[in-house]
Image (tube, rainbow, N blue to C red):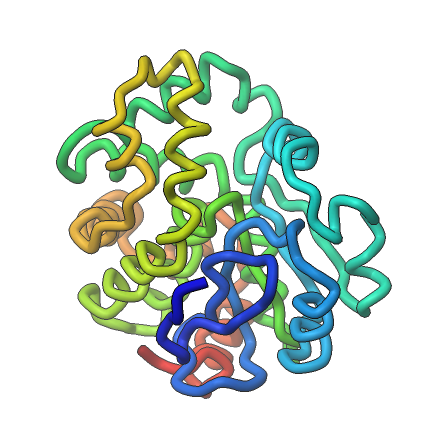
Length: 271
């Protein structure tokens, strides 16, 4: 595996794109993000539990994704579905898209948004994530808004889109500028560099993508301008990250304020 800048990346054997969110150092933080962790080795699981203190994993994927990837991948966690609990980690399934929204037709339409050139397609896809993911995101936000939340990991399949939108909302809520938020999002291009050929070849097998290699390569990218455009959309459509959390995720005033305090006090180091 090629060496990744550390921080923010953390070497967790078996998991791609694993990094601390906003951390300026290696060591226990509040929030980590990654690609699907079910290929974690025993060493990787021990590092998550013992070195990073992770006690909860939030899985943003839909059921069809989990079933498909579970058959393809043979990681430690796939062989033993209780392996996380054995390491003191609770796994919470909080799908952004309901199962009925993840059928072939719906997935095909969503994929096509990502393959369009420019940022418009990503903004549309991320707008759909915000609409469908409000309950899933609300669960994660409430966890982070506790008085003393333990470290946690948030992931989807690649740790790029659903995970990236959630992380952007957190930093917007903490008052971070758009540029550093988008720079943090773009780090996924580094984190997934060695996995991209695998992702591309798998996606090209999907009939909905019609063998569109250029479009698929765009789909798996994490361009800074796509997140900048998404932040602009969030501010235009929702007013602010706080309003989205309050009005769409159902957070209370106390939860909104405590979440910001946890972020700004250094539980998530400022970027």
